[in-house]
Image (tube, rainbow, N blue to C red; front, top):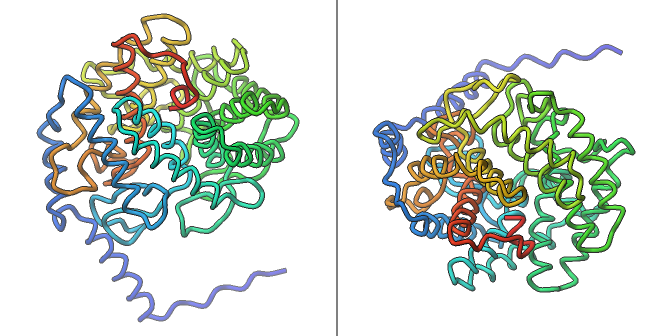
Length: 425
């Protein structure tokens, strides 16, 4: 069978599309946005003032998350905020609700309610958890992308929302969260083959052939198996996590572990993989799985600069592959190193954490009159870098808040595995 050549576009159509593309690019230029231009100039001057105490930074980050929830027409949390005009969303400002990251913001809000003495944050968290149930797909899966981008299932997103339901179930004991967890868990188990590979249900919004970061999904599956008494969940989680550990290279690096570029994976997805192996190994009491996560975390330790900066992407020899930082990944690794300290009792894991937190604090604008910029954490430093370009991201802000709370609790001697919400933050 021969394919038909599509008809050539007329000159007016080509001209209209060309002008439309150029106009969208022009609208995204910093010179047309005083707020964005001011932020870029501030970055060149060394960033924002960093308070030695965590509380002022934590309060602003949590308040940003609250505004992100209030900015949506539902109880989900906005994916982020476009500081400049976004060609993808075709506007500047708040973006639609994002089911995936709303899910794992639930335990963050529950922990912040305790940490800050703000019970209204628990109410927000449970509203989000009920909203996630309302939009759960009939298969038990969670959709990929933001609200309005279709209703296709996504393995990774499903696992991240399970963290929220786990925390909500522990908080309330309500069966609706257990039911949602079971349905999601059965979807994940059904999508996995006997070798531990997911064979269906990968997101349409990322590469389907480079998903070792799904280790974080099967950590959620292992937690659900323990919480609900579902041995099929823990068995499936063990198969997948052991498969991921076998794929690790001798120097700790993971192949096929990125949303877009498996040859130069993001620190963000490397950190997802590390955390999934650490915590999955802890839940399953599997030292080999936990050790695989620790090897990658250890490889990153000496790469943190004196000012707390890390590259946003890495080559297979752990050399930096880009000149910008992935702020989400930096915050995630701070959490990973602190969790390794708590799991192993070894102080060496804490060495880079103050530097990383100081660097992240200097990227947080706490003084802007723009409610979408103030208090949130950007995708990249500088803001025009290759991840979350010119955006404030709810998941970057989440991991920053988690790291501040965890580090403060370590300093006070109160950091313990006292609850699912804390472990999963």
